[in-house]
Amino acid sequence: SAVISQKPSRDICQRGTSLTIQCQVDSQVTMMFWYRQQPGQSLTLIATANQGSEATYESGFVIDKFPISRPNLTFSTLTVSNMSPEDSSIYLCSVELRQPGLARTGELFFGEGSRLTVL
Amino acid sequence: GQQVMQIPQYQHVQEGEDFTTYCNSSTTLSNIQWYKQRPGGHPVFLIQLVKSGEVKKQKRLTFQFGEAKKNSSLHITATQTTDVGTYFCAPASSNDYKLSFGAGTTVTVRA
Image (tube, rainbow over all chains, first blue to last red):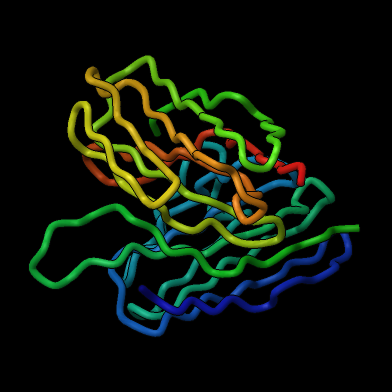
């Protein structure tokens, strides 16, 4: 398994501001993802955070709104830009672990999440 | 990503009873995973099913993958209060392993 730390755990923000969420993993991982979970809803994949290159965004999500950094194999950030009340959600960092030399399994480990409320 | 329909959306269960949640797809899935999210918590991996007709058990939980690999189910026997939470099925894309999540079945237990 992996220990995944997210900061902040929760925040209340004003409309029009931006917030950066940090994700720190206790081991090097190749695959790191950012998900959003709106209140009472399922999880929606925002993007795959790629180390050393631009993130790969899913349909409906764009870099200008959700810029992502991945400077190394243990750390990533997600910024929610120019926030509106519709951005109020839990944002979850997740990683896929794989033993060296073995095929990918797809099993994800999630951080505790960052609960964002936009007023 | 792969689209699945998960039913029921809510399941209210008397403690000690059994229940089943279903995950259905219109297309063949390469594999499917199940996650549990406790209230206020984050999703936790339960199991992955890969083979046609596969059945896996974890104590009181039985997971099944259909013969056609288009549906999956989770059956819980003798429900306990610790089973409270939302259960998500999550099919993986065959080429890049990105997971999409079903809508989830939220389980509450009456003592």
